[in-house]
Amino acid sequence: MTSEQIKQEAEALRQTIVSDRQYLHAHAETGFALHDTLAFVRKQLTDMGYQPVDCGKAGLVALAGGKKPGKVFLLRSDMDALPIAEQSGVDFACPNGKMHACGHDLHTAMLLGAARLLKQHEDEIQGTIKLMFQPAEEIFEGSSDMIEAGLLKNPDVDAALMIHVMAGMPFAAGTVIVSPPGVSAPAADYFEIKVQGKGCHGSMPNTGVDPLTAAAHILIALQEIQARELAMDDRAVLTIGTMNAGTAANVIPDAVVMGGSLRTFDEETRTKIKKRMTEITQGVATAFRAQAEVVFGSGCPTLVNDADLAACAGTYVKELLGEGRAFSSAELSAMGGGKSSGAAGSEDFAYVSQEVPSIMLALAAGQPEKGYGYPQHHPMVRFDEDALSAGSAVYAYTALRWLEEHR
View: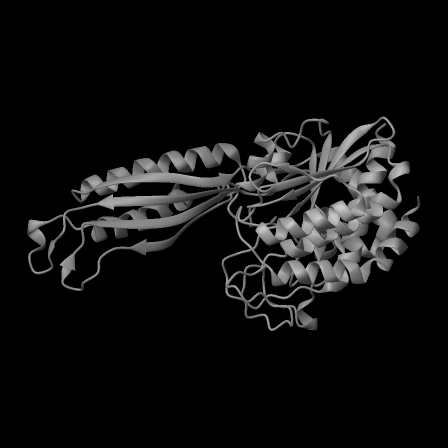
């Protein structure tokens, strides 16, 4: 098995990978409700000769290799879409009000492509490669659900890799960027703030307790955490995205509900901000004679990249794709003369990275100058399918090479 051989075999599978991607895209599903997606992935794997096993609420796991002793390398793809009405204009757009606007259809198709490559080289695998097909990434619940169901056990996983496609990148489709050691994706916390007042007629505010006034001051006060309580290098973003209350213009409502998200690159900062959010919310509400609580819902920790695995992955992808198609984040920063700020989007592969040495790779899948300028999660985002065969090759080759070097 050589890098050139894997690359050529992946290119020979190009149309199959594209076809898989377009089917998945046209049948987008969200969360754990992946009936069509799971049926499709299961059939593809079974037809290849795998024995896919259910894992958690809606995950699938398949094993490649295992014929020779060695370690276990995990390859992960996510399968869920977003509740977005598609406006991309592609011929295979999803008609059901859901959309693969983050590229998870590409991830799944690429891992299916890698599964085909690995079957062709199964006798050469120095250990075992575990294929992880994950639901519910967009709500940060799928990875932890699969881990609780035994994803990392039987056989025990020694290292893991994920790829995420990126639209709107100024690189040729199929170019890979290897994350640096340390945190590359922030922790995420979704929250809801409930402010309870006392409703009354708008002409007699003195007879009630206005929760809107309290909520407005809470919103402003929370922004002071970042402005006055964090150091310059404590990166965090606190966003209130929704505020809902009332049904009539002349009535002070009983309650207000705000929703938002918190992103942090450090677990200590994350804990501090969440504590202060509760204290500020309750204190401000009390000052305005209201009551309030902060309820934290789904979220995920920081995604941590292992230093040794980052170095190995950097070597392997350059062997496979060549120097001009594979870069480390440090190399990109040096080329651009600036400092990389890291990704702002969170990623629930973080749960895996907290358990085993892991690495996240970014795969360029759309240059703005070629009409791929819309960002992820936008209803008009499109991805360049020229990235697909490269992604499948990177999945397969990285796993094969790591197992070969870590016997």
